[in-house]
Image 1: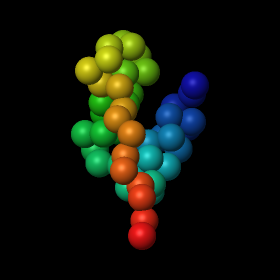
Image 2: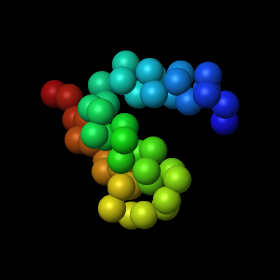
Image 3: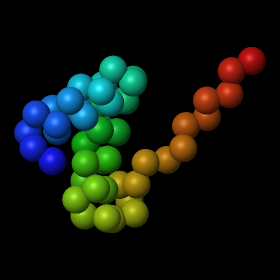
Amino acid sequence: MNMTEVARLLLGLRAAGWSEKEINDFVLYIESGEEQYKPKPRDTKKE
């Protein structure tokens, strides 16, 4: 993945409403594979 693609990924996650901590943890999970950084499912139920 080149830097342009990384920038688009980060901007897309921000646009999707992810916090800076969620984005950082996700990037750490991708690189390290450590479960502590793995994203948790969001409760997206809308009534």
